[in-house]
Length: 156
Ligand SMILES: [Zn+2]
Image (tube, protein in one colour):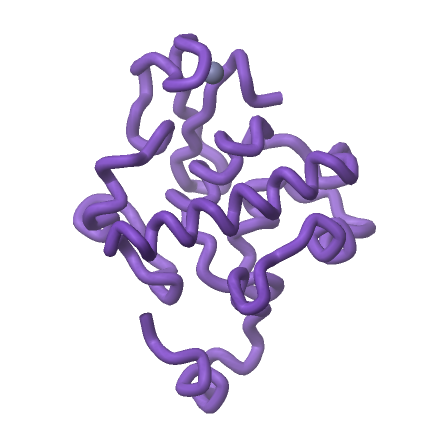
């Protein structure tokens, strides 16, 4: 992981949002960032103008943990769900770091970039496999040109 201090001086990153772990994201903060918007939650999480480092894989995994469908509009998300989602994002990123997978500064993802984190992915890339939480089938759909994976039964 590149040092945050280094990024602070990089003009390419001047317009970007905050790091999700420094300090850890909160539900209240996510709710404030989403206020007045109607974007699908996954696109919102991946928008680096607000929060950096949540790529397609991390967003999919965090939404699974928080039991939120990737295409749910942010204006349909309540306070307790925001809290669950903030905790899920933090947990997924911390797990990725602990497992030596992709770094927070890796905006790309997909084949070859997921590293060791791949082994513990719950939904990403698992189209047709059983949900590790409820056993229903994992579905894939294309959202804003990217693959989204979610459990039809336990993500709402
Ligand atoms: Zn499920």
